[in-house]
Image 1 (cartoon, rainbow, N blue to C red):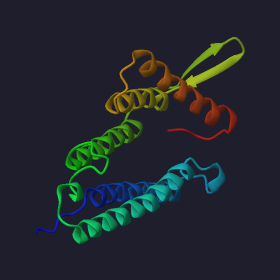
Image 2 (cartoon, rainbow, N blue to C red; image 1 turned 90 degrees about the vertical axis):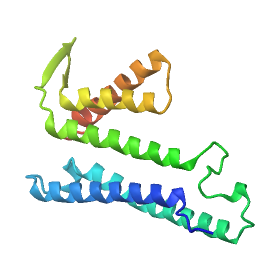
Image 3 (cartoon, rainbow, N blue to C red; image 1 turned 60 degrees about the vertical axis):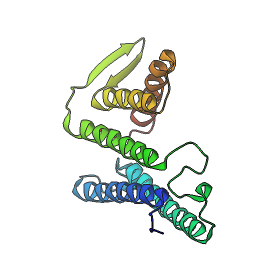
Length: 182
């Protein structure tokens, strides 16, 4: 019988690469920045997310190795096939394509944050001033696209959730925590 690589291992490697990329981006950008205090650095959050992605992807790779060993020790019937989704939901190769598509959407979001330059626009509502720029526009579009990709089809949810989350993040980080956003 041919040795097949379990889909969890492939997904784990994809996520591990993304996590390591995020870790390196965070460390390199922090080294180039003028702010040398991690507590106030905008690169602390990507560092934490990259570290978590790397650790969790190692766990996912371990699960794939265990599942591959379980299949190798099994009786070779179809329900033990590592290329099938364990939940019985279909082909795991399609699931790996979905992971790659989600990572592609994340990459496009990152490029939008890095390359697009939208001028800061300040809107005053009563005595509250709200400033929005590239971060807000790119985040709303990214969240709506990701939710649509994940199967959300209700239009009110696709509109209000990205706007609400983006508004919350922007106010929390800019106004309350005084952390720079891209």
